[in-house]
Image 1 (cartoon, rainbow, N blue to C red):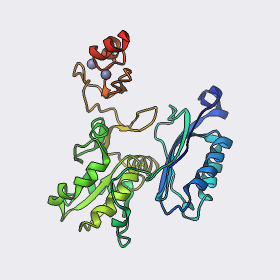
Image 2: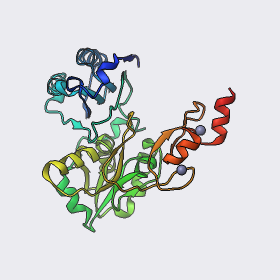
Image 3: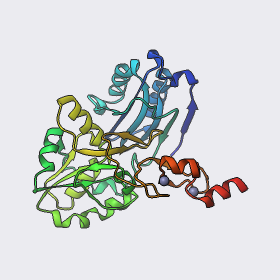
Image 4: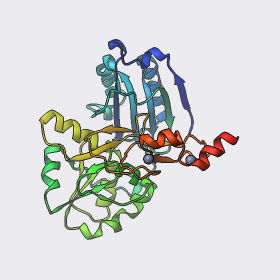
Length: 313
Ligand SMILES: [Zn+2]
Ligand SMILES: [Zn+2]
């Protein structure tokens, strides 16, 4: 697998103060067979250069996954360009970020990978007879209060910690691959219920749904567009929002605030807080929650040990 492409644009393209440079955050994915990912990569790379797109883009034989920051004025033309890349990308659903006041990416990284998301599954195992069943926000809200349904959070524990659907079940793992390996046993007691899967934008549930169906589960659903799709659909249709806290995102922003509920505590002083930081000691790089007060005391270090180690080098 080859080719990481990295570049940084002139700062003016990151300035949210000028209407012409206003950016929005988008994400999309699609599983479909790509015979030659390098060809698609080249086309996308050209599009990114032309339209000043920043982001993280993965292409593989199994599909495409794009998370990007795009200039608002180019959104429609970018959407059109992506749709015309391949017949299977026609009418592609693009999630628009909930929080566009902050920039998600300031560099571009396009990579051809073995898989667009590391799942540890052999693709051949996925039976083509199963299909994905999607729920809109109204259907989600109805099922949330239905005893016959169970919501499974397909994200990692650190994502769940700062925001989730009320009563959602978490498997408490920090790697998707392992979660997928364990899920069929884990949800065995819910076999007769309606199983609703959710993740940030839907990509993880897309595969999980097929995987657990091929393991004998029948009533498996997923939220269209994941949490982001749900929130946007609620806003559009004026439905009540039943997701509480923050939506963890894998970009510079780290989160999108959905409601004001603070669901977790500072790792250092245990006060209520839900702001993630990465320990700036490169040898550590721990992702942890740090309150405002502790960020003044410890700066962005996870511990005094890391602070000392960093300054003694
Ligand atoms: Zn603290
Ligand atoms: Zn540290």
